[in-house]
Image (cartoon, rainbow, N blue to C red; front, side, top):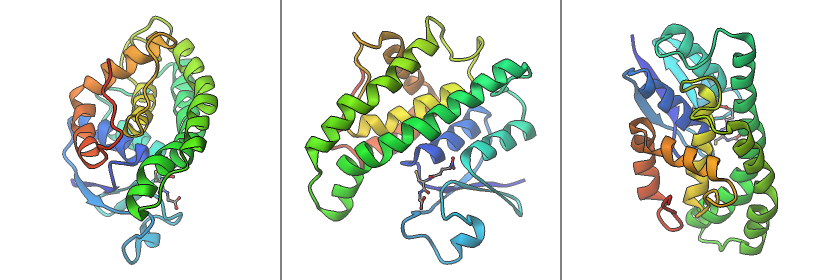
Length: 221
Ligand SMILES: N[C@@H](CCC(=O)N[C@@H](CS)C(=O)NCC(=O)O)C(=O)O
């Protein structure tokens, strides 16, 4: 049985899949794919041209959420979803809240704008626009995530789930842009991010990202 994650760990969606593999203790290879200059034939693997894609022997699976579900069904221990319908719905909703809500803001307005595009093109970032996005767009997301966590250690139930992995994954990209949740304003979210990023599975993903994108990298207090 062989597994390959296609993509690059600076993508929060790719990171999510790699953390899931590591949390389950599964061996895998990673094949570096830049979606903006993909290898020939990549559309045959990923019809939307996106990363991650996942190869299991001769089977291809697309989309991080679909891939994570697939891995969890094949290797149910430790479970990252729930058999309880409401808990399961909450896990999938929080995943969508981040993947479909937070990341589409963080990606283009903050991470690409401040970190990746200037690095790749040498063009200066529009700092005023980035600061505006940080000041105006992020707080409603952080308010919700802080409230949803409450005083619990994990977002859903009493153990790690895909909700936690997805939320924490998005904050790696924010840290590359010098952004972290303010401890005074969002204490529960800030403590959660710190806890999650200290997990060995996250630390392993963070190390190369931090080395590559060090300019604005922010430590957590
Ligand atoms: N819903 C997808 C989103 C994947 C995604 O948008 N990946 C980005 C990289 S972070 C990408 O491949 N962008 C290239 C493109 O859309 O052309 C998933 O969860 O896998």
